[in-house]
Amino acid sequence: MNAARSAILLFLLLAPGFLVASEKGEDGWTEQFPRDEIAPVFSRTAEGHLVLASERSGTNGHWLRSYAVEGGKSYEFSARRLAEDIEYERRSCLVRIEWYGPDGMLVESPHKVNPAYFGVDTDKARPDFPRDWDQLDDGSVLVRDIYMAPRDAVEAQVQLHLRWTGKGKVTWKDVAFSETEPLMPRRVKLAAVHHKLSDGGKNTIESNRRKMVPLIEKAARNGADLIVLGEMVSCKGVTNIFSEVAEPIPGPTTDFYGKLAQQNDCYIVVGLPERDGREVYNVSVLMGPDGSVAGKYRKVTLPREEIQQGISPGTEYPVFETRFGKVGMMICYDVFFPEVARELAMNGAEVIALPIWGGNPLLAAARCAENGVFLVSSTYSDHESNWMKTAVWDREGARVAEADEWGTVVMAEVDLNQPTHWQFLGDFRSRIKREAPIRKAEMKR
Image (cartoon, rainbow, N blue to C red; front, side, top):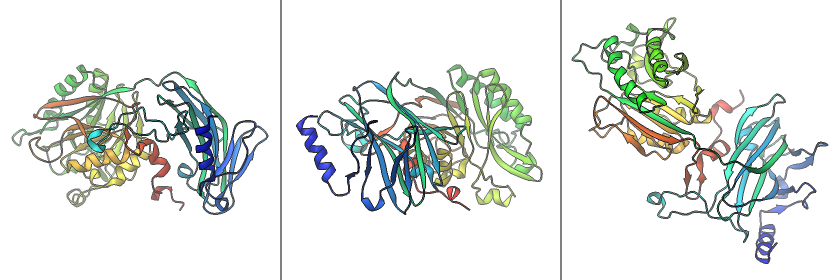
């Protein structure tokens, strides 16, 4: 260890609020915590698993181990996390990885930030937070991610945390950090139809379908993986009383668009009124490339016009696994409320489809930025107005493609594996689950 690095580490160890409670063990792990009064109980199992336990409120501490790395190479972190009696596991039990150079300082981030936002195009590498994946047979959760070490990095510091809990314990099993193959791009082409579906008052369900066919086929020829149609596209202009044309799912509309999805080897999001017994819902359906219903979302937030019609609200925020990634849906008025997009994002959505009659585009941008998701909107608002756009939105809320003519399709290719880094924050999307406030759905009844 060089003198500069030794001096820096000595300063950190002696600085108020930073303690090292143990010498480095044979396995390389040390115990760390901000203050003695909130230190967890550290222990190892007979198998060598790392345990953190809490016996008092405000517990905050972590195991720490350093790994040698080479800038520009890729490394995989993986571990099994077994939490017991932890109230809010996603916030209390996490992994944090920091990247350091030969001088003991954080290195520069390998990701360019947007100078239009921040006035600079470089930043220090911010911590990474590996994501949760599958729950395993023993009740543990697989925590895993692949990262490219920043150019000047020589060391990765891996931290296994327990924090913000008054009881319980977490056991970190099979912790591994090793060089691996780079994470390959995961490119997907997102498309939306821009059509006002105006037929001089002579719209029918059949005529609406006919108008969609050539646009879907055009998008598919250009490689679209996901094509989003407008809200209530099945009956827009046919009637304003949705219960008159509501149908079951599966039903005639999903059968029609299912065949189109199968013929064109893509996913299609179609809006329609669903009848389920006595109740009618405003629904978006995800049709899969095999022609079947891949998912269904019932609009949760209803405007007064739908409430007066007796439309029922949905209560769930489902996210659906597709061959390119995880897709959630919301509908029109949902975009006015941050909770809907947040629930979808917390449930794993990488892309949100938004069929929308009209709305404030600033809200769509906000939903992307605050959740780190891509969004695809199909609207009936005039593209020449300063209102909602038919567009593909990136994770920062910018429109990367938008319609400027009726009867067209907009499309953009995005990489779902490419992180979006912000100045001072790093990959904000990876931080949301670890730092976002507790949601009502997480609170114990």
